[in-house]
Structure formats: C-alpha cells, structure tokens
Image 1 (cartoon, rainbow, N blue to C red):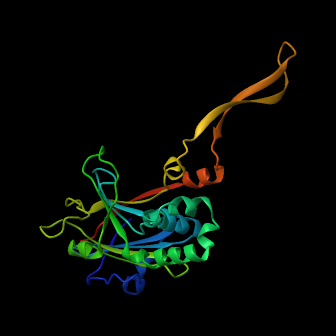
Image 2 (image 1 turned 180 degrees about the vertical axis):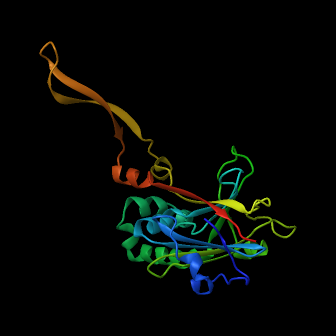
Image 3 (image 1 turned 135 degrees about the horizontal axis):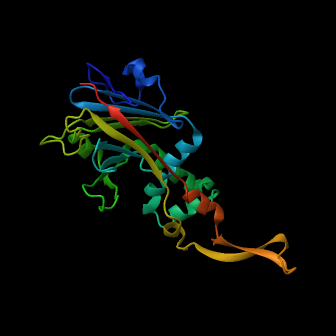
Length: 260
C-alpha cells in the first residue's frame, strides 16, 4: 500500500473531510477501509470498520494497531485503540466474567449505565505496546492523552456513528522529545499490523479446558464380525459458547510505502 503525501498537516478529529479522496477510496481488507498519508514528519492513519462482527470484537476486546520497521521485530510498537470494554471494566470485581458469560447482565439497568459510560469514555482510553526483543511480553500499558500528545501522537475516534472510525497521527522518527515513532530507518516503508485478541478462557472463568477420549460407533463390522468403533478427543468445558467466543482472533498485516 502506498501512502499519499500531503502538503498540509491534517487535523485528527475522526473526520475524513480533510483527507484527499484518492487516499480513502481503496479497500485493502474485508473488515475495514484503510487510508494512509504522510508529510515529512508524521504518518496519518484512518481506519473505517465495514462489518458489525469485527467492530463488535474490537469494541469488546480492543484493537491493536502496530507500526513496525520494515525488516524489524513484529509487534515492537503499537497502540491499543479502543482499549476494549472487557479491559476497561476489569476494575469492577466480577464484571468481566459477567459481561462475557451472561448477555443479559449488560441489559440490567445498573449495568447498562456502566457499559454506556465505558463506551462514552472509549475515545479517551489508550494503551501503548513497546518492546525491543521477541522474548519480551506483549504487555499493553495504559497512558494518558496528555502524555501521548507530548510524544507527538494524536488519536481520535468516532464511535457513535454506524461505522467506527479511528484516526491517528504518529511521528515518522523519534526525537529527544518524541519517544515513540514509526522509525522507518530511512527505508520509506513500514509494516502496519491489525490485531484483535480475545481474553483467555481460563483467565476469565478459572476453568482449564480438558480433552476426553470418547468412543463413537461408526457402523459396520470388523473382519471378526464385531462392531467398529472409533475413538476421538472431545473438548470438555462448562461453557462451550463462551469458549468459542474467546477463541476468536484477527490478524492482518500491510506493508506501507511512504512518500516524502
């Protein structure tokens, strides 16, 4: 994907009105439209979700956006935006488990107000991922918007519309004032990654999934006239529907060529 050079800095306001039309008219994934532009200092990124499933998963589990060196370590620098409701309500004991296990829980009046407040504050919550070694854990750290802005990074989100829109501005290179950047190393290219990772089933429920060997009849007879059975391994969990939900993950990577 080729970035489009923009002569004038663009305002980060979750609105594509100041984006050149040729930069937002192409779709590179089935889940969302991606637009990338740059000037000599910053990369501008806009993501517009296109289907309800991906948008719901990003809202619940968080949306990771990685901006890595072309030939460097993957997932070395990234932003989690939105952070995700499941992460945001973790400060309330038992809320994550109830939110995921019982769809009716979120419709109770006292809980509906909590979820609505989380959704309202979603544009103001963000996490950073930064690591220099593949053995380092992927551990998102919450940061405040003033700290983020001081590092030259700006983000905004339009969540209340039918399709969620995320807009970001990231420095191309680090400076004494800016600790985080795309850091293209003069190659005029970087890897742009998107990821949605659900929480671990055991972490949420406290139950470790196990497998049990189960014999099933396949019909017919063996050479001695006996019944023919087959043994298969069957997953044993108390909440298969939740297990299936938490097995969801999404990954997509695009190489972006800058123009400056």
